[in-house]
Every structure is written in C-alpha cells, then in structure tokens.
Length: 341
Image (cartoon, rainbow, N blue to C red):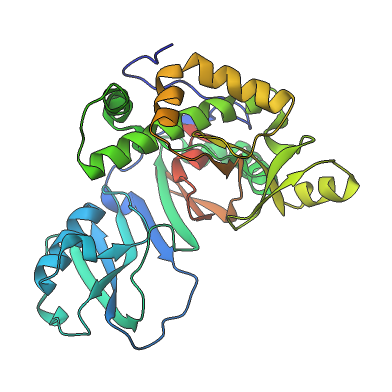
C-alpha cells in the first residue's frame, strides 16, 4: 500500500486535543534554540569549534560559508544537527585548519561567530546532548488560558510525550516521502538526497507505529520482550520480563519503550509488538520493503520523550514556552500536544 502524497496523517496525541490555535515563527525571535554539546573542549587540536548564532539561516548554508572562508571542503565542516531556519539559534560548528583561518573577518548574512575553541576531533552528527528552546505560541487570548495550559504542561512534565519525528523531516507536502519512493523504485540520487529519502521513510514508519501505541496506551508502558531504551543514551536492552523494578524505572522516566526504525531487523520484540509493527510495515510496503532491499539496518528509538526544565509565561498575545529536549527530540512534538499551529 502506498501513502498519500501531500498532508501527513494526524498522528495520535497523548494529552488530549489541542487547547487552542496558535501561530508560530511569526518572526525569527519567536523560535529560539541553544545547543548543548555536553562535553569539554581539549583546548588543542586541528579543529576550530565555532559558537555561531544564526538568524533566519539554514545550518548547511552556514556550514558552506564557513568552509569557503577557511578554504576547506564543505564536507570537512562538522555540526551536531540541523537547526531550524526560521529561528534564532546558537550551535557549534567544527572547521579543520589548525587555527589558520582569520575568523575575525568572517561575514555572512544572518550568521555571527560568538566564540572560538580548539578541539581534537570533528563534530559529528548527533554528538550534542540536548537543545534548549524558547518558543512563542501567538494567540489572541493567551492570558485567559492560564489554568488549562498549566494543567496540560504539568501532565507533559510528569509523563513526557510521544517522541514523534517533526513534519520538517518529511519536507513540504511530504516531498521527502515522494523522494523515498523514487529511490526505492530505482532512481539514482545524490548522497545527501539519498540520506534525506531514507530518513523520511524510516521516520514515517516510526511515527505510524508510535501513533498506534499512543492510541492503545502502550507508548508509556514496557511490554514483555520489548527492546527498552535507557533515558538520555543510545543504550538498549531487552526486557524479557516486566517486574516491579522495571515498572518503577518507567514511572521515574529512567527507561522507555521503543519502536523500530525500519530496516533489516536484528532485534525483534515478540508477540503483540511484532504483530503491530508488521501490520504497519505491510500497510506501507512501498517504504518498508524499499528500506530492506537497500540493506538499511534496523535500529530502535524511544517512544517517549522527556521534557526538562519546562516553564511558561504570558506576554501580550503570546504564550512563551521554555524547555529542554535531548538530542533527536523535536520541539514540534511538544507544541502539537498544546496547540494547533
């Protein structure tokens, strides 16, 4: 079965219907992101680590400007993750060159270097620990929603929320999913486009599985035989049996159930989980079979996303949210549990 081109599904929500309609990104400063690497710099080495603030600029575009200024290949510039374009974001870039570049003379629209450190290794994708967000949800009656919003945010802080991939993963009108179908049908794509296509296909299947588990209530419960994620890490283990100790760790947000990032499978959670995931894969066989035929290896992603340091305030016509997500978490997963944007 093929997915529909265009609008993405309305994946299940865990905390109830959106409380109100709101506008986001009315201006870049309405969406602020600060990256936290979570490790110390060595102070020496061949890579300059640049602390860059970018406004309404694409991460990859900024990386290319840094490469051109330093006289290196764009592929040599490292960054931990793509940050939102229509936003004000602060993130790290690594550039090789043993400190030879004159960064004081760097100039690019929407990008400013705020600090420079030296380190031994290139910055790799996913190497950061977390991202801190400050986001405005603009709505006319923000001040009149204090009690209902407070209750919703308290629930999110206590239980976390479904760890959906955000709509940006799928491109405008699902274009990246169309790209995936072209790839699986035999089209030859450049390396970056191929990576985008594969990622979109896996992300869509994951969201479909997660939505089914939100609907049946199992997204925040460990089921026997399930592959389990240790919070804040990529470590997983199989829960052959569910006892009081595991249930307590789930309640404490120390561990999370997972779902498959589709591919050739090495770890299969048996029983009802396997049955559910197989049904999703068969319903979208144009994606699942395509991933398998390319030899993409399966992985696991936690179903639940911890939201830390969550707070809010009202300012004029906006509800301002402050929160921190681990690497790989999407702010849109938080927003969709509060408002329809």
